[in-house]
Length: 245
Image 1 (cartoon, one colour):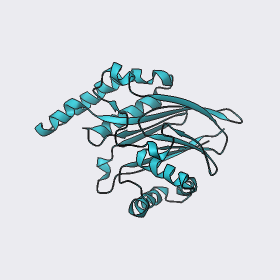
Image 2 (tube, rainbow, N blue to C red; image 1 turned 90 degrees about the horizontal axis):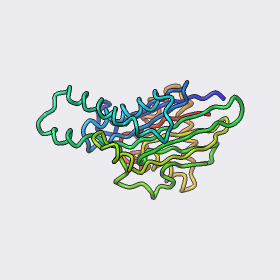
Image 3 (cartoon, one colour; image 1 turned 180 degrees about the vertical axis):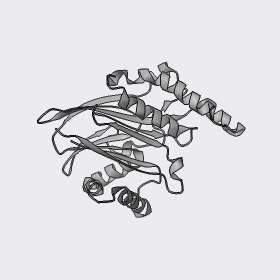
Image 4 (cartoon, rainbow, N blue to C red; image 1 turned 120 degrees about the vertical axis):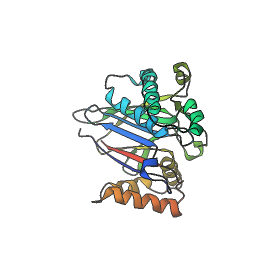
């Protein structure tokens, strides 16, 4: 089975690309994909999100249920990078508290023919939506739009390892057929998609159309801005990692 992925992102309206605090990473050869949403109210959240996703996709031998074990090393990297930067006095308290973010990681085991096996780990409300044609087969870890809230579970750059292990980390798995999509989305887009689905509309068809244009990055930005203006997409950083099985 040939597996490929595409990633699209857009900073929240009013922010520059440098202020974008989501992060995504893909290792096609290893079948590992990750998405994180840095919490805006914390310091250097974009850096923390990037460390989380980059580590996940390169650690090809790690079992998903042992995923938190590598975080203490990432915390050291985060702190070293932050301390190397000039920090104004008024930001020091935020640095002491650390950065926070949600996380979603996926591994795929492709079969030569037929279905493939996927596994996923998540903390918070960055979501995986598994579709086949116009049908939604699975939503994880948030299963319906009403489950989104203002206080998702987060992983922190200064949390103790014991505290991280007590976070509500969720694991699941599934099987995909050739032609299926695994859509990895940060919370604003995932919420919109589930609202549309629950209303009997077809957000998956709209998402597919983003992948077919000759200038998909610009098309994505225009599409997101349109949703923000008239169709209920919350103004936040938006990231979509689309995996085609």
